[in-house]
Length: 95
Image 1 (cartoon, rainbow, N blue to C red):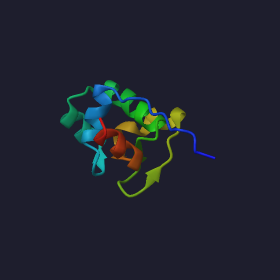
Image 2 (spheres, rainbow, N blue to C red; image 1 turned 60 degrees about the vertical axis):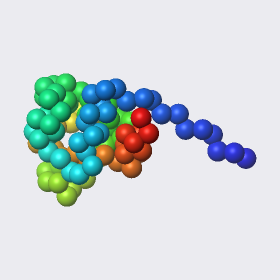
Image 3 (cartoon, one colour; image 1 turned 90 degrees about the vertical axis):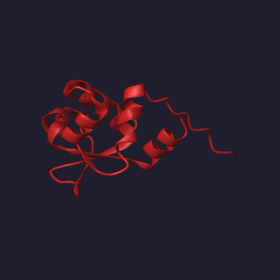
């Protein structure tokens, strides 16, 4: 039996720009500065990328991975660090 094909949702231009900066663990403030995205827009795009499993989040430090929790993400987002996942890197490199 053949495995079912995997369908990926194409990332938006903003999500692509974010993935471009996440080859290394990066704090929210630096990510906002490098992408030029306003904090609320960056937060919205980070949520989307986390929901697609294209990035990982870390909090309270860059070494502690934190599972994405939609209800508490807003409270810690601007103090968190982010890194592209393997899937995110593949998505970024195949566009």
